[in-house]
Length: 330
Image (cartoon, rainbow, N blue to C red; front, side, top):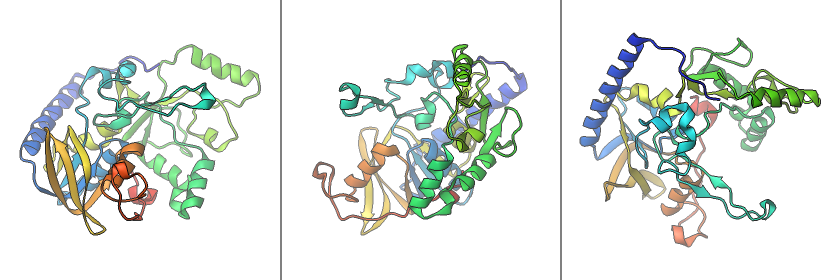
């Protein structure tokens, strides 16, 4: 499904290797000389954290610390696209489980979340799925913010994509940091299923990320974030190209325990790294991008949010302004 490597450019391979060595040396130096204070601290190096860290680091005057509880993504099970199942349930997966569901005969569904730089984008199936128009417009209505609307988000998707399928300027973009292509070598079952859908009257589409996301339903073969057989995680697309710079530090195996609060202001973070508790201050802002489970956990452990779960820590309820899609912008 993910396809084998089809291109080999010796000059490009050599350039990639030289850059990777510069990144390794630079990050080794930056983490060995970890500072007690950064302008921005981004907690979590998953998809959103990688984008935010990159965007902040584009300002050479800003110092950015990107914290990750897991380790490096430089291993075959992550980099080689066809090895993706080996990550599920491994040390690179938080391996959360849902509660037993009576509607599923009491089964518990795995909630796989990446514990590695890149987060879920380093362990998942690499499918590129944008979301349906109705969902985005619902978000916009609930937030009372047109920046969440389908049309607004579609413009962002066009800007960030580097689409390698059939040209479709209404829905797809080229030249952005996010390499996307149609599944290069789909299992024969996939087109057979699409044809089966068509035979019973279900509309079929070239891609699920175009007109299908405005329709009442349909079938298509997935678009993938795979290039020459290699996974294209969001971390590799956004953060990694900036890791040879002096103002972006990635600290792995750093578990965020809580925020350091001064009244209603977050002035830094408390982390557990190398078996020790450390405090690092933030001069401008702390950004939480720890996923749907760890973000509320850290907020509660910091005394922010619902007072009910005393086992996690309590405190006064504090409202945080959410970042809109126009603010993030990828």
